[in-house]
Image (cartoon, rainbow, N blue to C red; front, side):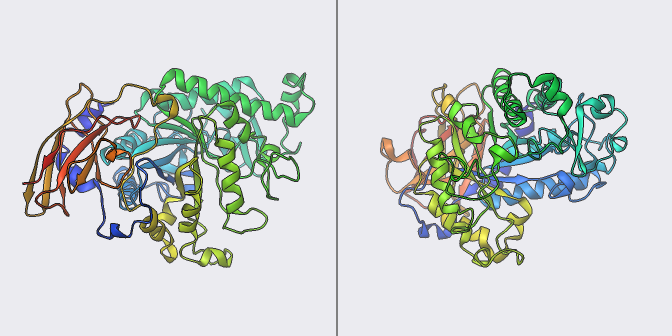
Length: 511
């Protein structure tokens, strides 16, 4: 694959077009000190062609154009990360030696789409300064139940003993150690071969808590020592999570590893440690001990899907947020919230979802809990459609300033990038053009551009009050501040792939 330096060479002009800029209405900032770091993500789903590609069989050029449009939407919404589903059903959006090409690309499982979608997707995200999180479904094999319809060389055809049919779908059996290892190998192939920023699981583990999911033979073979089937199943999922952490860190220690589980671990009526809710419990129904993973330190982040409105019975957003904040408190697991953009303005939803500021109110409530480091929006189509203006309202109210993605606590003490040099800040017809130059051996992933009315104090870079742009990195970049004027003082900060920041550059006063 081409190096990132090759992909980004000559993109100084593109940086000006794709920079996340401070909007004119920023005077309406809700926060006195907007956060410098905040996860602002968007899920781009491929299963059943939910988002990308929009339908199977599009040409390579059409698929590329659709994907670029999603990234441009993320930039317009002032996001900094995308979570792209690249293994929706035990298949691949890259030339994998483990599993066949995804049917959602061409309409035929195993058919080469004529380009490398994952390689393209990562490069285009980075070109716009967006972090790329590779989204995997760990166990789902097919959205239909006939193994004969899988590609002839599919692992499920070669190892029919790995497959469990349930509910009109096919699944890999999580209780088989060889399956767990194979799934990890298949996903790590993408991690090791591509320049991704994170490995991400969704909320699908065991599909149900009944024996209708027939794993009795695996339980008989591997379940000795467990009090019941549920405890064994839960241990199988625990092993997948813990082993993935170990293998990801061994393969690429600077990428993020996390999961976006269903939003309720257990209800208080079931477990005194549970939330004040009465909904489906991931611990029991999916055999996913999401609270335990946080407390045991097996994840870099957790992004629970809190897809309920404020005040909703039996699962109230305003009760789940403090519960999750308490779970994350004192741990090194970052907490981001999955937001239900897909419900806002949907006429089939409750009246509370017909209020334009419901999602904005979620983010306002989040501010009361410092453990929450940002949000991820589901899904991309709803971020684009923006029914009722609900997403744009949240953006206006909470994303007035650009934001860098969070730094993983385990990487915070790593070596920061070298301090860049600000070569000039010159008035042009379109504003003030600044030129920042990297000084270290490594090319920055981003440049953060700050503007002040006077020379900045040492602590003035701790928040985003004066952050006016985040520009995709290169050896040097030029960016024009449309609101710049003579006498403004500019600084640049280099940002590396782990989101660590350099010391501020020299100051340059616009002439």
